Every structure is written in C-alpha cells, then in structure tokens.
Length: 175
Picture: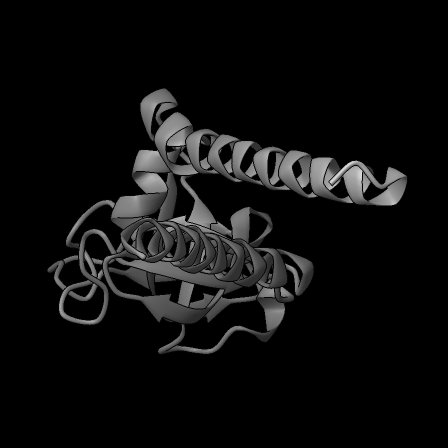
C-alpha cells in the first residue's frame, strides 16, 4: 500500500509539473502567435507602473497611430541591442519621431525615429521577467526546459515499456 501511494504521488507530481510547464509554454506560444513579443523590464525608469523584473507583452502597431500616454517599446537609437519601454509624451509626424519619457525620470528621452518603435505595451505580468532572464542563461535553460523535458520523456518511456511488456505477454498467453 505504501508503495502504491508513493507511485501515485510521483505520477501526480509529474502530471502537475507537466501541466504547469505546458500551460506556461502554451501561454507564451499564444502571445507569439498573436504577434506579441515578451520583454523583461530591466530598470526602474517606469516605476510605479512597471517595476524591474516585470514582463511586458508588446504588440506591433503602426507608429503613426500612437497617442500620448501610451507605453511603447523601441530600439535605442544609440545602441540597437537595447530595447527601451517608456510612455509617449508627443508624436511628431512632421519629423517622423516620437518623444517618450520614463515615468520615474525627470527629463524626456531624445526623439526616436518611428521606424525604431517595436510596438505598444498590451499587458504586463509582475515578476515573470526574472524567470525570462534566467531562461536566457545556459543553466536556466537546462534547469527550466531541458531537465523537465528529459524527465517527462524518461517517465513516458518507462511507462510504455511496462505497458508493452504486460500486453505482450497477455497477447501470447504467457502470464
């Protein structure tokens, strides 16, 4: 009886873990399919609305449709490897630029060409940005993706091997 309970708990733990991983990956995939991009907030320039470690989903929009007060993400004109997420202060269509400012900053950012705008922030998820940051590191990728996937494969192979042996012997009448 004790062994049965231990096995049942093991199976339940794997099922719950698998369900959590599947739900997370499904949610991320849906965001990607809808054209959203998931970014991690790295600084406190948008406090109190966005805090360091939050995740934001941005949806691609026509930059000419932006309005003052919306939060957008854009590639930094100084360093294209840096993505900035700030609030639109003013849209200057005549010069093809947008003026943004972090809520926690005193001065607005330099004008940003409209072609560098990635999109508008559609949603925010508190603290998930920390997990996204860890998954970008080799050890986080191994621990968060590869090991759980390997565990599920091993569990399924063991389960299928046991089921195959039982069915095989029953099929030929050896049991």
